[in-house]
Image (cartoon, rainbow, N blue to C red; front, side, top):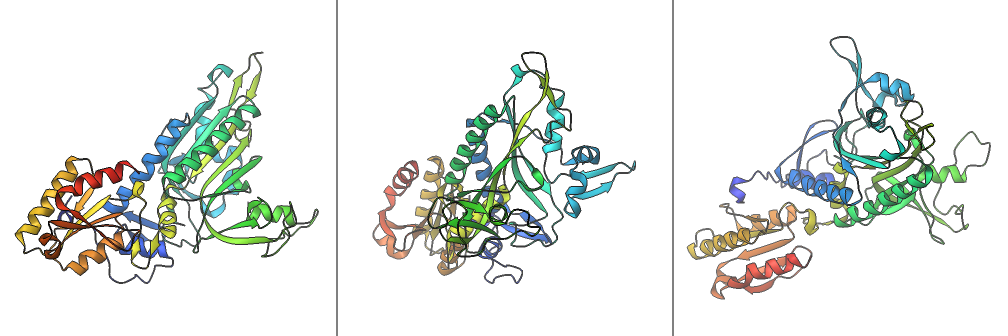
Length: 433
């Protein structure tokens, strides 16, 4: 790909609306543009990162035995009334009447829809277990959209649902999804902290959130300095609130841990995933039953497993950036490498840049050639801002040595490589990652 043919509208100045590092850099690097409060358009570079994250999720969900489906975002309100969540969701749920006067909602989540789907399809214990997942747009009318795509009104989510005959089967699926989440986040370059969490409006008996510790996180991890205890703020409040108290006692820095009495720490974080043991909360009220080996009807034992796909991009940026811009992990970078010919009026430099570009593409490298007629300083600043993992720089100075400057975004100094060896070195480096 050539920069002159791409659509990468980088910005020199930080937009006034940007509140945190990830929001600022997603705008400045040309990944997204705001349409209205809580809604964003993904530009080509942002879309490339999003698709790479989605591919990782699909691979790991398939590896864990989940089957992909696609459910409607437009849903009848009747299902939500049956489950009891129509009133419970409050003003966050987008509700309206269609032209026939039928009450509809834009799905903030899909427990009701997936349960209704399998109710007439999975009839016997022989059909179980099953785990279905989708990657779908969700809608929530946030009272205060903020932090760019971290808290938005329209967002992309991966949600999976397991159906088992008993609690033992649910535990197996829950552990399988737990492990899959660890692999997904690791492949995205994220270190996550799994914490005990409150089930909230989702319901169920048990849940864990996967948190990324970040200076600008909108959530909080409550962690003990003396043991392995880690919980969300709401879950910790339940443990700390005295029995019979009407007011929850939210944790404070230095409070005693409910497990070992050691001091608690409150750490800012971004929630990127949440898994739940739902039990029969939805299957019982929506009539989703199966026949066991004795011919008795029983409700499915369900689990629910969500990942905020849109949130992964800012979470990655919040933990992988410096003062110059983004530092993408190789597995999710929009392009693996960028070629910067500094003197566009030098035919020999252009010829060498074109050769590297052509050979790298043939070797399967995702590479961008910056062929713009702009200064070398602009090219280098844009390359660092967007955050390509590898920078290949050609100049009059390197040409005299039949070499290029080969620099990793995470390192301060470049390496001088012979032009003829650049592509083989590049391929070897990528194959080792």
